[in-house]
Length: 304
Image (cartoon, rainbow, N blue to C red; front, top):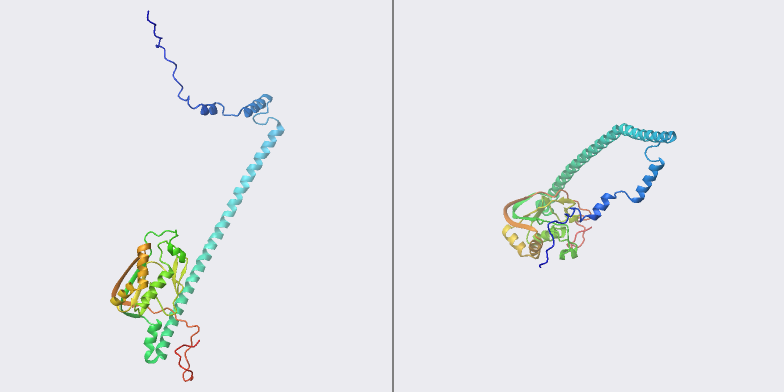
């Protein structure tokens, strides 16, 4: 006789959907700690739970509410009273800033006018006392505007300049950020002079024998005037010959290395006519003209 198979008609009860979340169920079912629940039950048992029932407790609660409301009211009233005063002080401060800014602009305009007047007087003095060589002296000193054939050199920072550094230029005081530095511009200008430049201006700023190219942060200064890239260098000289000589010079190769290594953008082209302004101011602090007939030996050196 064959053995009868077990009856499978009754299936086991389905599992709970949240059977795997026992920890979450425990937290939800026992949201209040047992100790807090026990303390709450004792307070309900002795009647101390809820709002105060005695007259003294009710008066204390009312007094606390009154003090809190009074503090809030006084704070709001004080803020409302002081608001016009703060607004008035702000307006006065803005007026003072505007007035000082206007005064500074006026002084700057006066300084520019005086600088132009001094430059004009210096040019006239050079022409008057220079004799037949007055124009040449003014030209060499940068005291007069000039024009003639030359070249146009445009140098600009890399397109994507970052603030990081760590390349070979940083060891000599530079940072590999794709920015042109003051020493880079110094080498470019010196290379142009050596290649035959007769007069140079950077972004309209005429260079003289006393010009200084320095840095203030990331900005390049020419005679303490900040320049903004791109840097346009206009040069008066024999255009084609000057451009070729500069490309072949050590400083021209240095600029090409900056372009290849740090993506400095540069372009040079010869121009049929270039116009350069006069230098804004010429101040000689130590040099003095040699007295005529002094009898001193002519050594070719100036006095100071």
